[in-house]
Image 1: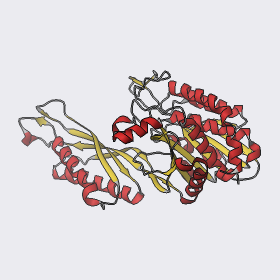
Image 2 (image 1 turned 45 degrees about the horizontal axis):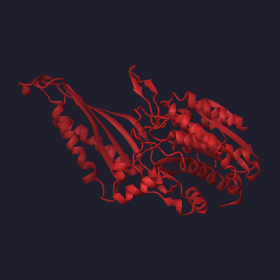
Image 3 (image 1 turned 30 degrees about the horizontal axis):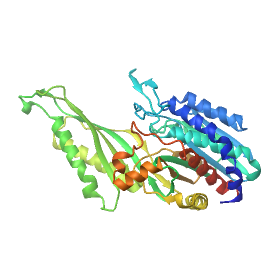
Length: 418
């Protein structure tokens, strides 16, 4: 570990309890995407308290804090803030009982089921450490708190609201995510790390009729069924066996009764890919299959194909990833690993792309190490370890928070401490 990292991280004991309290508070009060007003206020207040120049309300609820400390590189570290419409079943004393209304006015439960409360708490801890030992580094540190990662539109909202004019241009952008690995674990990866994700809604048009008179109908249920079957061949027959991709049909809706042929069917599907060429091929294949099956079924109108959500692939740049991996190896020792590619998706890479800056994104563990080790011994990791987006996902407070704070700090000082 470098001398600046040793110097700055010596202050970890002074922020630990406050960060733990903040984490529990954030977990107890989750907020959905673009409604993170309380969370954003907490982040902004914490940054101001330690001397950052703060800008709030970027893209609605986004926050940046800038700490200029002489000549040197500009390092941006990003944390996402939003929660999910999930009812918490962790049994924690600080479990969420929060609710919110959806677009239809219906009440729904809200939970930090993906660990964004960990991300916010760790970045605030790192920001406080960096502010407390400015004698140990030179340059500019930017802490960015992003809304609505789960919706895939938070980074874009900040960019559209002038983020690049409101922040110094970073020389590198850093981010991390807590995953169901043992707490204390850190994992880096050069190249493809998180998949691209595209969600599509396909509307197949038919001609309705009585179920006893199919000759008078164009049955969209049959056309939709043929589309679903044919889509299974995109990955298995159009891509090389070494090319990773997933096509999942998650929803199909048609009709209102057993004896009525409806006039349309709606299919919703999700695509995961790791590079632009594969992504383009799969999306083109889906459109080709949908249109061909509708034509074969004599649909009276062309199908409607809408992209309802989209996340870019997260592909780590080589040089910053190598630099961070080396810094992690020096600080974390045997707890520093190479992480496997994940089929989860993120919109974080839109931010460095807007600035024209390189980036690296890594994983930290959040599962109790003893529980994880026992699950490995029993071969029950997939059954016994709650994963992100599940009602039981609950990162242990420590050493998860210490690891996340240290990882952000060590990574930032790989530039600012030179």
